[in-house]
Length: 211
Image (cartoon, rainbow, N blue to C red; front, side, top):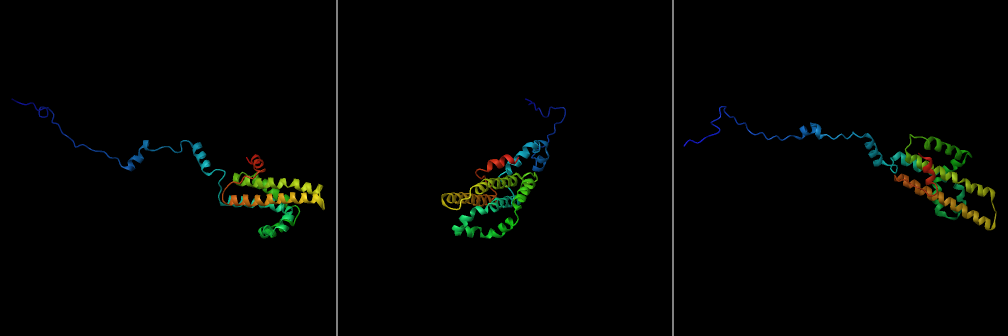
């Protein structure tokens, strides 16, 4: 019996080609259009990610230094409220003694405080070239200095020489000075470490002024 062989019975000879196993390389995959994801497809999202990564609570070295220096302004302007504390507590006197030359220069001209105020407000706070971190801290220092108007008015209208009235004035002046000193130490050190200090009483007012 003859067996039918399907291969030999074909009129056209059949040629078998070797099977090719295609293994694309990494470089060829990278060149393929489907491999790429368009990272710049949404520029708004990319900018948002950059802002979130940096944030207003972070700052570079110059921003930290400028912000820390600004808090010396209200302290120098209100140093007279520490006349009772400085004379009674030697550690506080030793702490601020290195600042005496700078305080002397600041107090040498009566309009220095006003000129510094104008400079900080119009050159820094209202200048969009500075980061919000710098402008916010500068505005906090300005608000602290503005609040010094109230103890100044109190001393001008009520200046007892002795008795209970003098004790009240001494306590009030000492409280104002200690607030200035604590604000200076806390805010300046926070700025140097790149943190955002939010001082009580003045932080919300500074937020409203800095857009």
